[in-house]
Image (cartoon, rainbow, N blue to C red):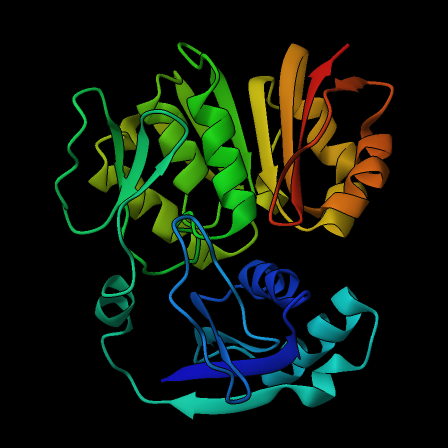
Length: 291
């Protein structure tokens, strides 16, 4: 049994709701037409949305719907929870139906995320095998794409990495495939930690990846700290995230809208010096270095 929730919003807010559902533990998220608006064939690299977009999240059947409504209201500072449509669904092979929609994607020059062992025609490709499953995070959201492209563009050889808010483990696993020495993957959701461990084993990097519940995380000194979560959470957890980066350590923050970048960066200054934000489809990534 599953719990499916849907919220109809203007297309400008759809990516925010998508990321919110992911952070609340959605095991899959889809975006669809909430009206009857025709959609022409998109051009390469385009991800157009309908003016009225329905964002749908699939949650475990044990999820408390009242807690979900409350969490949505708190995150959005509105009474949007009243507009949530909830539906109980019987078991079915959701993973396979999602896989039908998920194609290989390249990030940066050589990093690929692929489902089902699809052939990649690139001699020096670095491949992460990942099918939609226990936790969302397959590279489709702009913030995840920004993080993957950043990883591909930096030398990670021998680096110690923390993936804070790991979801499916996609960022930590990609870091290991790109040469990182070790990864500590952190999340508050037990399902995310299970998915991360399973995905790490599938990619033959399980021996270099450690999963830790957020409440049990002890002091770690990493060379690279990744945190792809919502802006308000990045600010609130700044005192916990910032110390994880050692001297000269790099901090990569995403999950924030372009107009939130300054506020998030200010929460980590003066300990970190930030480069100009990298942006994609209205979302931003901050790269800072510990002073």
